[in-house]
Amino acid sequence: MKNEYPDHKTYRALYLRYLLGRNDGELISLLQLKPGDRLLDLCCGEGQMTLRALALGAGEAVAVDAEPAMIGPELQALPNVRILTLPVREALLQEVVKRRYYDAAVCRQAVNYWLDEDTALLAADALEPGRIFAFNTFNERPSETPTVRQYKLDDHDFVETSWLVGDTVHHLQVRDGLPPHYTTFRWLSPERLHALLDPYFTVVEERRGKTSLYQCWKK
Image (cartoon, rainbow, N blue to C red):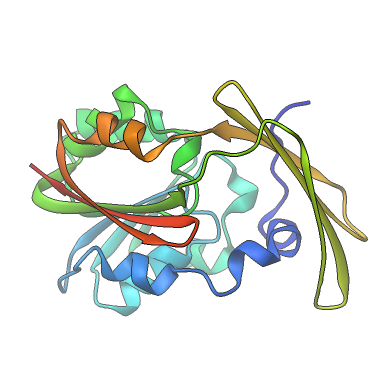
């Protein structure tokens, strides 16, 4: 099996639980945006972070997602949003090489797909000094034993199965009436995240149960 992403409407329907009551407002507030700021939205999906930033006065944004079908039409219609349908590594490298620098960078629920030694440096290089990269992720090590969660939302039945193999999380998401979605991503412990980010950022972690919000100030 391999990672294959549905369109943005199907993704929202499948992952409804992850999109309800999340820390989106807190996450965007960590950026401390100023009027006219330039935002880099990594793994933007539908573009909720970009839309929130623009509503708060950001002047422009670059929205990055390797999956064109994941990008919502509202985002595509905005004249002050530039969309890059590239993997995060390639997008960051392109912006750094072209000497395009940003006032803030954000990644909602997706940093485990792309953050490593190389991309941590690239993310820092894409930011103006003293500005902020913010993201959220889970802070508890997943079980190596496959676990199954069944629940109902909006009169639909959901099943999730996830398990850890080495440092890779395997996740299967199922909802009645839709094809399942299988994906993999890395387990990044708080200690590992600090090891990746501390050389380039002053890192502040705020825990909300099993979720952590990270505010990373470029040194």
